[in-house]
Image (cartoon, rainbow, N blue to C red; front, side, top):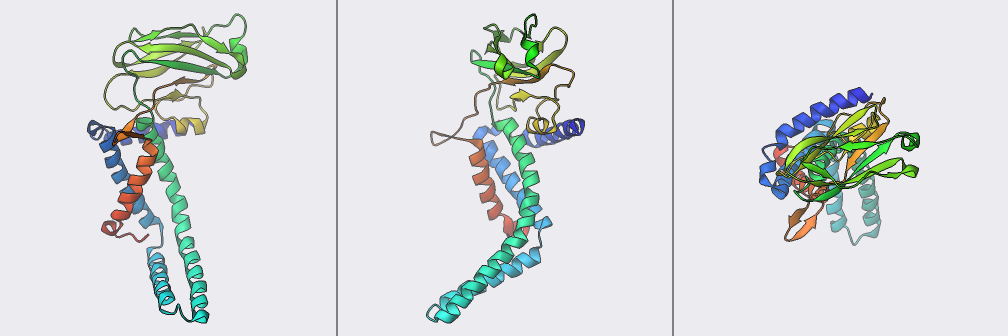
Length: 279
């Protein structure tokens, strides 16, 4: 299962990168607008393909007619309450026609959000900026007496502290500082097996992998930036605490997820007529 997820991540990250590469030069805000437009159009198109468009249109038309009748017969209580029952019944039918397509849409939406988090969830370290490298081990015994977990990094990344061990959580942490721009690997070793983790310092808007995880299919799916760590290694995950990416609107920092949800829903609704989709 893990190998299938790894291949899936590699292919999907490559394809997303092809679309994303020309957009990243627009900067965080405008690239997010462009991605949201594409995502909104894609979601509406998929909804149109997996839903019963004829039934949805018929249900919407009937609801509109019942709402109009509600205004016309508002003075006749018997007819008024009868129409309300009809509105409730047709509303439930509309929800029934929309529920399954919405559930299907959750799959591509989650996949898209995972890829967006890879590119907008964090930014590269700036030159001179500090952060933490956190290594989580599979077994607390790897932190026992006589064991040694080491961190090695190229000159572009300065290791400023010794590893701080926390046996209760099976973790070792180091403070590091970006010394010069570049994309390179640091290496964590227990003296027998070594595991690398990609690091990015400086540069434009880049997709940065905050964590390299083990081979469990769910964690591999959530962190697609790097291949999973093999089960033979005592290291379960390597995390770099990159700063969050700031997307500023009128001087206010807004989380990328909020922007994507607002823009994609807005664009999707605005262009549904162009795509010929009834929602």
